[in-house]
Image 1 (cartoon, one colour):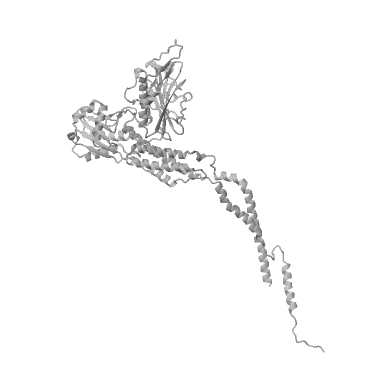
Image 2: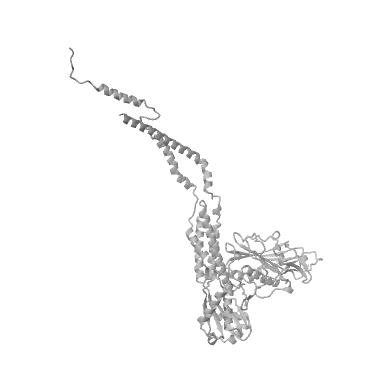
Length: 630
């Protein structure tokens, strides 16, 4: 009989069998989709370390190829340029009218207001440069009873203009304020005479009504003292023969057309020491003037002349002037002193025969025909005087004006280039029997007449009148000359004009420099350029401050410095040096060295990162399936 056991059946063999089945099932999975171990990060770390090292060292590379750029005050430049372009550059000009022998029934203030109103009408539209349109005009009406007698004073003023000029100066100095422009009107019974002195005053004599006196005073104030006697006081684009460095080189040349006929020489030191030095000192606030001279031979002209029986001379007309200057034969641009951006004023001089000699006034304001068709000279110099001596075949050689008359000065000017004067020897008959070369020297008297012509041309080139008369709507006024070539009121006008031109040029140059620097981030900007820009702005501010208080010379000097510094900064050699290159150029230079290495490292890092992510997904898949199976 069989025995029945009370103990339960054993279950361990079943559990072990199940675990074995799970392990066998996992081990049967594809290794391409799962893995049992966690992927390592050593290869990834090494690859990323190399990549990060390149990234961290890139600023050092950029620093090694960095272009030095000194900081520029861009905001200050923009503010200055906008202010100059939008606002007027004006001086506070004062005016005083002194009436002698009149019986005005109104007060001094009312007469001054009438003159001021008339000046505003004459300068309708105004100018953005020069004297302020808000004129300060005062009038003195009770002078006859208090100080001088109209008859006696008027008689003294008619005797001699030079002495009268000093008398009027003493009279106006009683009221002080040397920079105030004054006009003295003396009522009388004789013909009206108006004279503008060489200081800052004028006087009117004769039978003139109160209304006419006011009108003439206003016209002299606005048209002569304010606008320099020119038709307008506006600044033209190329009016100023002053170099960007504030210098003018006056180059005087004596040209002998054919030395086989005759050879002329001159003692230029007589002109330089006695006549030119006062002119140079007078122009000192406006420009730094230097002088040079030369004598040239074999210098034929490029135009033709014809013989005229009526005048008994060879004639060249105004239509031939553009072809007169022979740039191929006249080697004028040889000045060593005209380095940089200086200007050389070229004046070709013709001497007139004794029968047509020039006036013997202290300075000639001769009628030299203006020539505007001559092309600009390639030279940076403004040649001051070229004196042309024709050959025996064309002697005497005379200039015929468009109206058919012969020129009294026998010369012409070309704006921004210079002037030419033809000098005919006293005897134009060649001694054919003489085989020896005869050398002549121009006499001091001829040099004096020559310089009178040159002075008129220089005045025209600077924008002033070359004659001694001002013809206005209310009458004609005589303009006295000065031993310095320029009167005080003319120098004031030139200072105002050049002050405005220099500041406008400075603002334009600095604005262009600012735009250029900001548009080219790889441009070299040296510390010297930054200093020049800063000093230019400071000089411009100083010029405006001086102008606001009526300091003409100081404002002209400061404005010239501001323009010079701005030009020096804009044309600094380092700006366009060989070290300048764009970002594209930099990339083209360095990419062959670094691009291959960087690409390999970057691709290796991407490949290693992709491999790590793939192996990690396999490990996560295995863990997930193992968890599900358990």
